[in-house]
Image (tube, rainbow, N blue to C red; front, side, top):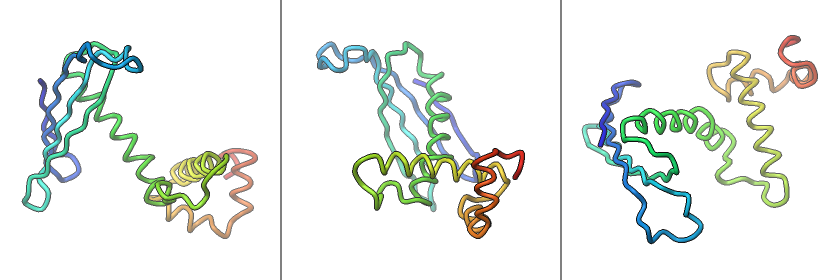
Length: 149
């Protein structure tokens, strides 16, 4: 078992990680899975403790402590990309369903996020607002990259 205390971002979070061997009774599709990693996050939110448990599976054989870093890095990806796609573009409830539309729109959304970040906008919506009436600039970036932005 490993533990880490985190006070970044103005909050207090305690993470506990435990690694367990997968039981031999695991079904055929999971034969390569060797370990279950249990992460318990406890944070102080508005003077109340909130606990969240997540389970991960892996074929890697690592002790608990390295998983603290690996899993937190994964959460960083979630916060920097997936949450933005969900909150800004409502990707959890897409209006375009079926066929290749969801994948195509996800690609466009990621490109918009990259453009907004590369041009230094504080948030993606601010970047979208600033570029909304500048199609010539958007097309220039699309065709020639950022050297002509």
